[in-house]
Image (tube, rainbow, N blue to C red; front, side):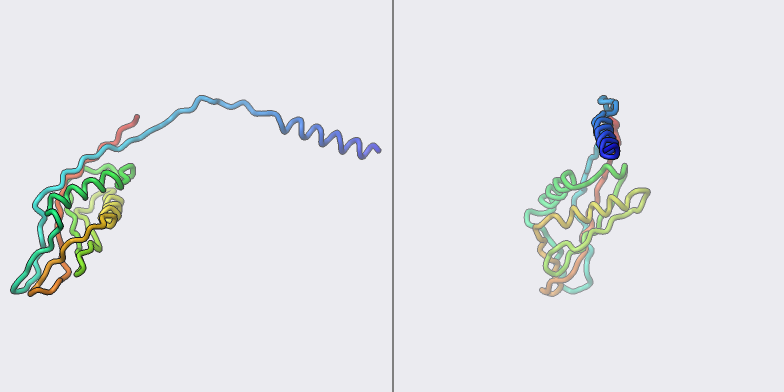
Length: 159
């Protein structure tokens, strides 16, 4: 009987102390870091020519200004600029395959923290679903490169 009474007393004591809440500080500090960025995409885009007799460059429906508008819209939507603070001129080489899809975007120059920016830009370029009209050489579609120059400025702000 003592053993049962001791077991019951330990259980009651255990549950009694388990319900006790520790003091906590309900005031919390919200730390917001916000990166603001500005994009200035330069026109015209530069087509890297392929050696052939009758070369026609790749084109985008609506022209360079339509692609510039789409690219800047997607950059503001999908860039995760919290990971880098960059300022300066950058050149992205868009590699357009024979079907008109942009299969890669290679950024330059490489500076501190630019790799994350270049990776984000590859993601941004792949999100654009409208295809280019591929470049042609003697009437046949060929893989080509389009150079897009831009000025990117970002500023980190503590709020």
